[in-house]
Image 1 (cartoon, rainbow, N blue to C red):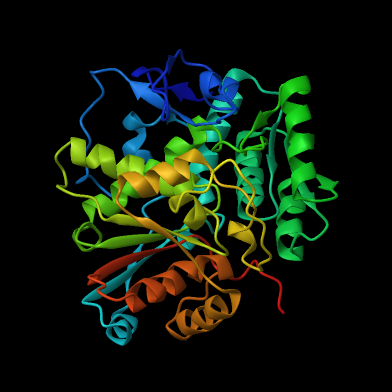
Image 2: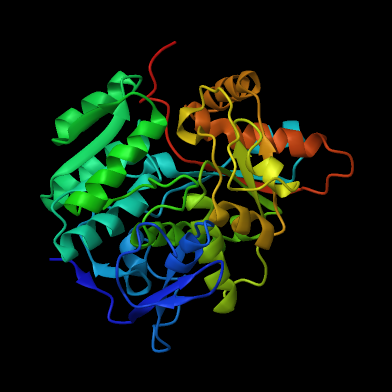
Amino acid sequence: MPIMNRHLVGFRCIRCDARYPVADYPEGCPRCLAEAFPASVVPVYDESLPPLRLDGPRNGMRRFADRLPYGDYDSLGEGDTPLVALPRLAGELGLESLHLKLESANPTGSHKDRMSAQFVARAKDRGAPAVIAASSGNAGTSLAAYAGLAGMPCTIVTTRAISPPWRRALVMSGAEIIYAEDSLERWVIVRRKVREEGYASATNYLDPPVGSDAFGVEGYKTLGYELAEDEEAAAADVVVVPTARGDLIWGIYHGWSEAIAAQRVATMPRLVAAEPFPRLQDVMQGADLRGHFPGQTSLVSIAGATVTYQAFEAVRRSGGTAVAVTQGAAEADQLALARAGLYLELSSVAPLTALRRLMDQPGSTIRRAVLIATSHGYKEPAS
């Protein structure tokens, strides 16, 4: 059985700072939810938490186990993904350096494995009858794999538009697939399973939304640790992240903040959210983040019409911004990266497209950049 970190003492709301005991908060902070302003909670550890080490052997996410909710958990070797230098593209963009964090090197081919490992550990520890997610892609395939590893039933709620490679991965992993009419109906089904049957949900099911499960999202801070310990990444002016509801960009912010608090790095680069149409970009300019921001895109892994408070805060606190990219420009950059040896999912190349837009702005001071590539392109159907 997974073993919970003995230093975990509770949870804290990232919006109102309310404190809560160790428990499950799939709908985020109860106080903020009552105010119709959903916000995520994050784990709180006691003062005897071991200091952050960024110089140990690089053997995956487990090396940070003493700073995660579950130190003993079922693992497929997630984490410690490579940081790839792209000197030719750097020269084309007029940058001193450009690096890409290759999260497609995780076991199921995406960053989601960092979350799934911790989330499934929690679900198994509390005796949930099954794990569930609303997903048509990386989150579902990752959750199904880790549930299979842990011997837990898994249900994925998706639509019939799911890519055949993703569908096959779910079937092969033993997950039950429930088809919904559209993306929003997926949330209705998941919400019912959680509230009526006690399922553990890895993904949001509220509208307005909250971030994903707090135990799981904590796994993403290890990506922040890995970036902060790398000299090239730590020197970056910006880190550009494919963003939908912001679990990953918040995790990077959270981990980097802990590295600063531990005096392992002095500063944090600006975090930039790359999105397929204006959502967070509009919120940064004053729109209510609880609204809907509809748009059509083939960047399916970062699609959706909603924004979360955690995404907004990660960008705001780091002094960053949000940049909407066009599908055509992203397709051109997908080809450019493939010709540089990196065949990535279309959503994963959005950071390069967003970086080009930032570089085109008058007075840009960006000289060093890191792109987060969340998944490879081999799961996408041929067009």
